[in-house]
Amino acid sequence: MAKSAAMIWRAASGSVGKELTITTKRSGSVQIGKHRKASTVAPTESQLDVREKFKLGVIYAKAAMDNPDLKAQYQAAALRSNKDQSAYNLAVRDAAMAPEIRSITTAAYTGAIGSTISVKAIDDFKVATVTVKITSAAGVVIEQGNAILQKNGLDWLYTATAQNDALQGSTITVSATDLPANETVQEVVL
Picture 1: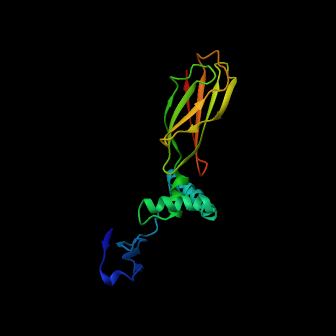
Picture 2: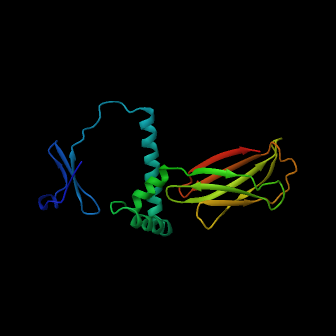
Picture 3: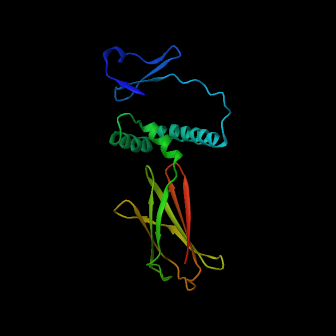
């Protein structure tokens, strides 16, 4: 894709015959590329999945732009990123990408009330919540609740509120959710 700053292209946009497509970006730059034709090949399952994700992203982005608080958050992020990004584009992207749980640290969890579990979770935009569930080896839920975001903006800390006397074989299930409600779940067995 060629970029041009020539005066002749500044007011141009659209297609030139079936040869070129001219696009003016939000930053004012002009891109000139080969005109794309519709594909004659049936889409693969993977391509259909991407299309479905995109449709859901568009629905979410429209709703986010109607919510003044969410719109302001996405607009602020768009201003910090790239001149050619809009708040709407960031919302579509956010809806397509689930958060990532980088680590679950259980070294400080002893089964006693007040012991802690640390979770490092990231997202392309913002992790909204991190929940922790502790289940015994027999499959009984001992406790569950929300972790608290720490000052570094990456780590979430969960403080135990129930005694777990049978620590061996217990399962820690962590769920990270972003603003569009994408969820990632990861488990650790003690």
